[in-house]
Each structure stands twice: as structure tokens, then as C-alpha cells.
Length: 130
Image (cartoon, rainbow, N blue to C red; front, side):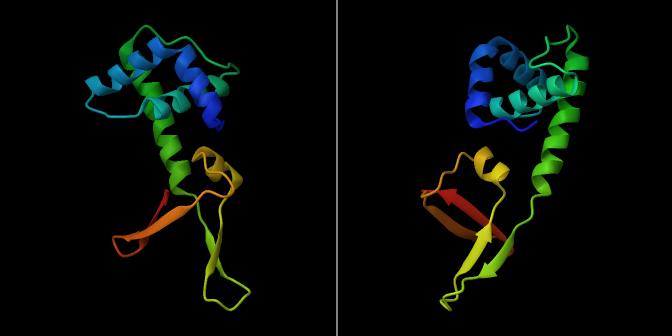
């Protein structure tokens, strides 16, 4: 289940105490995750169990195990996003890159946004909204 930015923000606001506990539980295991990542992981776990938002288990070890399983799944899904560059038809040498609607939405990008592109580590492009 991919959350839209507005859905993620709503869950952050509605379940602030639960989010704080999840982040603290991960921090106790020396894992640093953003509130948004934790909310997305728990929302996906809840969705897999036919719920919008499940109550947290009482046991921190159980909570941490669930979060880690879903955080790893999110990282694997994010790492598998592939893009294809196509030469612009106008002969300018420009490249056109098509990004999935899900990726664009998850980044909260909109048509007309301006991006900067930077080369990092020789083979990685870093896109940043200006």
C-alpha cells in the first residue's frame, strides 16, 4: 500500500503517540528512521492485515520485528525502481526520463516543478526539487 503524502501526514497527526513509540523502539536498537518511513511501514502492515491502522503490540520486541520486516520491504521496493532515458525527438541531445506516477507522487513532485540533477559517485544521478 503506497500512501499519498496527504494520507501519510494525516496518519502522522492522528497517531502521533504511536509514531513516537515506534521511532523510540527503533532508536533503542540504534536504528534511525524518519517518522514518515515508520508510518508507511505500519500502514502497510495494517493493510496486509485488513485494517487501516492496527493498535501497536504491547511488547517492544514484537513491534520492532514487525517494523523491521516492513521497513526492509519498503527499501527493497524503492531500490527496484528503474527508469529509461530516451533521446528527445528535437535533436537537441536532451534526454527524456519517464518516472512512474507512484514514484512522482511519493516524492510529492508536481508537473512544472524544477529539478536540479547532480552526478554522485560517478554513476548515480541525484534529483532535487528546487
